[in-house]
Image (cartoon, rainbow, N blue to C red; front, top):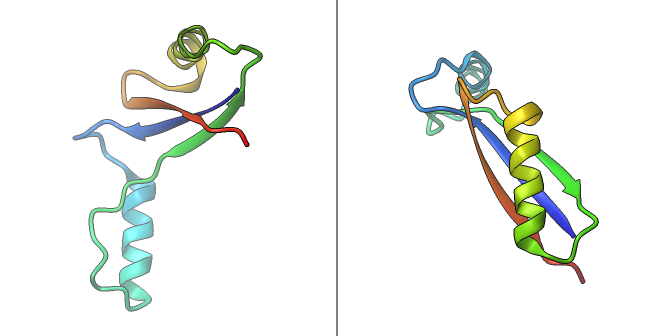
Length: 82
């Protein structure tokens, strides 16, 4: 089973990387672009067929290592396998 952990800065937290991307896009002529925020996506493969068990494991990993809970929020989703 594969899962994605989407990690983003919390609302109100300064995001200098997002601001730098926004400024660069504006300089390149993309004047319609605004309020860019940069995060990260981590793809994880879990050896489990139980989605609830897998989510519990990923939440624990996110709380302990993957996300800085002081300044970041995370969201977990599962990928459908073919």
